[in-house]
Length: 140
Image (cartoon, rainbow, N blue to C red):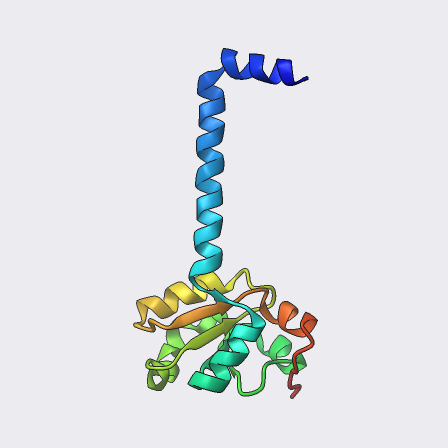
């Protein structure tokens, strides 16, 4: 089996090279995105307690009412651009963007960065991870 692998590599160097290039680019992209702007639940808790971070929940109102982080502000992602002015007084504080699974908060981060919010980060895993970590939620 190993002999066949070496033979394939020798016979198809461009194909193997292209595969390795794509694999390297994908790994670099994933590492950069996971480390650059996301915080874990415990890091988010520290930001909230030590730096008075603002939690921005971008889920729809129904999901927000079903359970959210204490003190979180709810601005659905679809309305974020029009309501960015509500966050202007928090430009000097960290903003933690929370969504359901931590996947759609990247779009909100881009909107916040465009609006001048330099300290915005996403909550890795979103509210699903927050609850899985056993952290408290408020229901209204």
